[in-house]
Amino acid sequence: MVNKNALEAPCGIHCGLCPLHLAVTDEALRKSLAERLNLPLQKVVCPGCREIDGFCPVIPEQCATWLCVQKKGVEFCCECADFPCVKLAPCADRASTRPHNIKVYSLTLRKNKGAYEWSKAIEEIYKLYYKGEMVIGHGPVLKQ
Image (cartoon, rainbow, N blue to C red; front, top):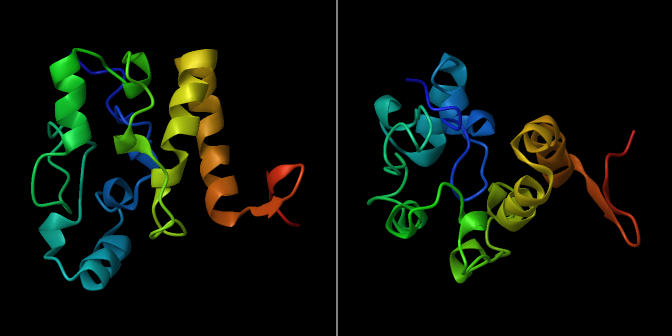
């Protein structure tokens, strides 16, 4: 049976938009990631964290957020009574290259609007995060 949430990480990250997942079918990206991360080619590909039980190829152990979700018996962090917790807290470190700061936004959108609306909006959210410019009073906008 196919997991309907296979590319939706419990923490709110969309695995389908992650470079490690995209590298599964993009050899040039795989080579670039391997070089940039100083890892072997086979370590920079990922089918999605649900497929590999939270053993993200670029961290040395099983993801602590993955383990927490399993322990609490929920599919997504936003279903937990402790949401949001410190594991999801934003951090300025590598904010321009990692989607960690949009986890709470992503999970809140999913919780409030549902999986279908989340799946329609998440790609645009990533575009705004990585390519948008913060406009005070308006939030992030894409400049033309």
